[in-house]
Amino acid sequence: MNSSFFVIGKVVNETLRLGNVVRFLHRKAIKDVRYKGYDIPRGWKVLPVVSAVNMDPSLFDQPHQFNPWRWQGNSKSGSLEKGRNNWMPFGGGSRMCTGSDLAKLEIGVFIHHLVLNCNWQLAEPDPPLAYPFVDFPKGLPIKAQIHTLI
Ligand code: HEM
Image 1 (cartoon, protein in one colour):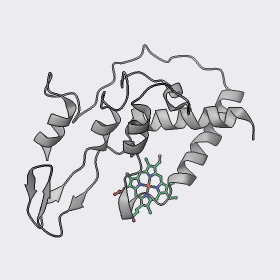
Image 2 (cartoon, rainbow, N blue to C red):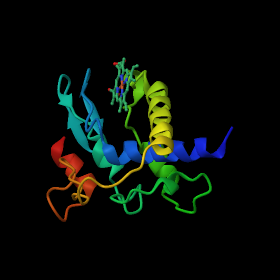
Image 3 (cartoon, rainbow, N blue to C red):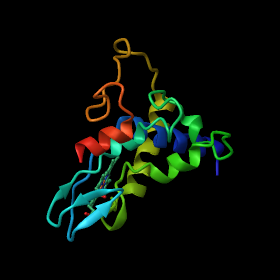
């Protein structure tokens, strides 16, 4: 298989990480749960904030930077494996997105054709990236923010 295929895979992964199409999932506790010292009573709804995971600096070095090479297999970044294992743009568990492979393939095909057939220029200067649920309150580590939200 052509090596550009693998480069596109990295670009797709990184785009899904930064794009944060789905920011949080919906779950409901079907029994009382104790998780990391927190009691979640039966029937409570829980929203795991996956965009906070994707932007967690302890998992991804310089998380605001678009860097497809962070997905390089032999990266020396010690956090890569942690990031890979926690990266969840398609959710997780038994309700994980059933279309994830198709979605990644489609994105790759689109990028392939757009890169080959179009000239690109910025329509306007890059706006700063905004991440609701992640960028507040300033100064708190992101993990603390997740706990605050849940
Ligand atoms: C970039 C594109 C996509 C993203 C980011 C995405 C993301 C997600 C997420 C986060 C969930 C919830 C998973 C969970 O609760 O753990 C989901 C569920 C689902 N997705 Fe996708 N999705 C994408 C494309 C697709 C496509 C192309 C299809 C079908 C062709 C699809 C079919 C589904 C279905 C059927 C579910 C419900 C699974 C269940 O509840 O058992 N998705 N998706």
